[in-house]
Image (cartoon, rainbow, N blue to C red; front, side):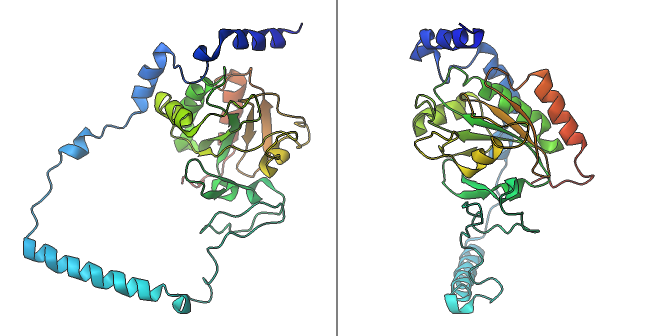
Length: 277
């Protein structure tokens, strides 16, 4: 019996109680470093506002709102913007995010032409919005034995975000239905202080009952990196040009030196003034 299969069986033997969002003793301490201190802003005193001036300002706001509403009427929308905010399907069968224009347009079928629905809003997010950034992508789950890898993913995002890295998590139920309910996903978000973007549950394998999402069909078919995703928390590194640089399975932790080195090299290859959205 292979060592990998033995390890997986060991995880199964641990039972549901040891799975999911049971953070390590050090996680709270590490998470505290990334917490935002909101006390100072709460303590700031607000200036007093003259009641009459406030009432006058309120009237002006109402008038401005009415004017804006009139301007937004269908007949008043400029021709160059009319229909520009609709979801437009691209050649790969995915949809461009509402209100975002990919300029220059991404080549059909390329990584930056794909989109997925953000968690928890369901808003379509185009991968073109991450153009000029390095992406570490993982198919994630809230109830998996590898769920604690969230902590290292968040640490990487916190450490390298200002340099041009964005971590993206794509929830999936493809493996033993371990993606988790909204409540279980939120528990993970709270425990691991997750701030990087996550996406709604989708299919990541060709056998998925949800159908394989075009983004993961692309990730698992690139030359040199072909093959089905074996389990939750497989990881993919995509550079700022939308090219797949590396792939690692669930047994390789996000903080593995090979992943960290690959991230560093990809960041060093960024343009001199990459977008820092």
